[in-house]
Length: 99
Image 1 (cartoon, one colour):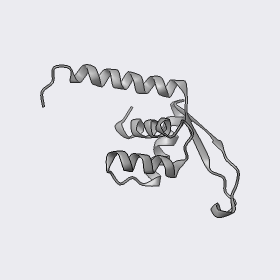
Image 2: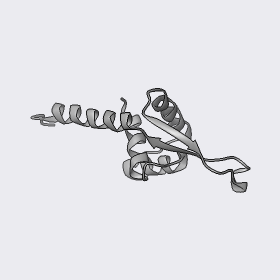
Image 3: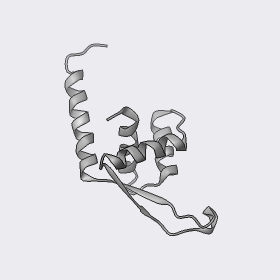
């Protein structure tokens, strides 16, 4: 799993495991100091959905969104396990490394 996909999963988890695109983007920007586009977030979410790491549900349509509903994303158990596996692999690689 790539770094940005990890950021997206962690942002969802940090937001209570129910987050929509703008919240995910803001969480990543606040924590990393990087500028993040909505397109990058939604591209990553599509990839993570295909991998079986996230799912989404539609909220209620709102007038402020022109009658559109927000998609709320949740990290599935497989996504949480992938995060743990990635962290364990990185921790192992960092053991004894001096940079």
